[in-house]
Image 1 (cartoon, rainbow, N blue to C red):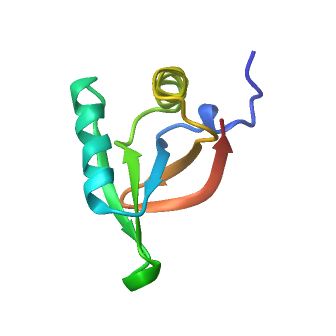
Image 2 (image 1 turned 30 degrees about the vertical axis):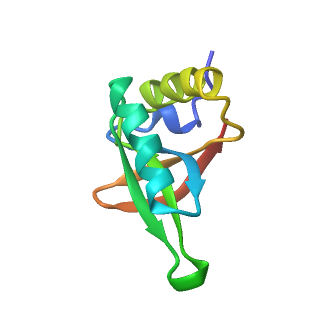
Length: 100
């Protein structure tokens, strides 16, 4: 049974999973298209700028249990390493997170 203090028990919160980072936009877009074929909504977010910039593929916001299930599926199918799950409210991210 889940810990009552875990993020899954907070009412009204949605979560995103930070799936993978890429050095090139084209590689991030290709992974996003691969997820689209699996009926998983995701977006590419630019992090940093210039020579230090990179692109992160994150899932659409969803309830905690759905996000965890999606991450577990993708870890098996796409051989992902550690994936960070972050609570979001509106358009901003909170610092509360789980690593799966």
